[in-house]
Length: 187
Ligand SMILES: Nc1nc2c(ncn2[C@@H]2O[C@H](COP(=O)(O)OP(=O)(O)O)[C@@H](O)[C@H]2O)c(=O)[nH]1
Ligand SMILES: [Mg+2]
Image (cartoon, rainbow, N blue to C red; front, side):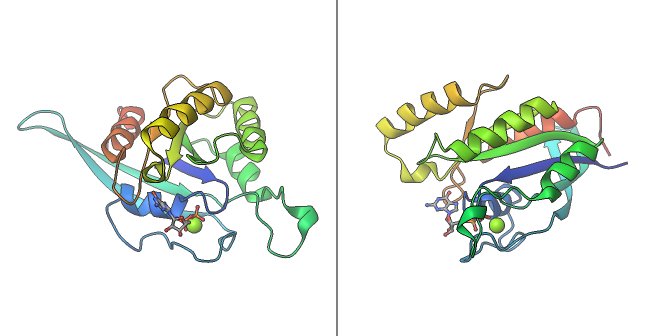
């Protein structure tokens, strides 16, 4: 069975842009002008490789799982804390899930809905990687202040990865982190 790495975050957090940047492929995941548009789970079939020496490489075959964004409802204001049942169903039944990347908007590090999501995921026992998005929009001071807030609010074993899909900042780090969890699952 193919292993999975999932991506989750609030609508408009920059998930589709990050998936495109990570996979180095513009247009893989649809970057939307309409937040909250994707309601279903998208699976991308990924072949990745990692150089382990001049002559050797490891190859991995895995599914990138693009989960629906949470926290946005276009019509119903009372439904703003929307968390699709697709998300919980997927997570509670995903035996091949190796890592879930939880995306946090670098400009809004302390959103209650993200904390609710984080606590739920920790409770569910999901292996987590925090990815801070849109860091190109932050100056140096904001970066360090917001990173400290994120570390305090979302404690995880490995530190958050600062990402910009515009500049591809953090791409290698995130690729390495994913490879690290896929070792032993080589294709
Ligand atoms: N400056 C900047 N803008 C970004 C970045 N990532 C996403 N965006 C913008 O944020 C908006 C939402 O992005 P999208 O990837 O569709 O978010 P999604 O709803 O989480 O899939 C779009 O206008 C993107 O162009 C980033 O790293 N830097
Ligand atoms: Mg999207």
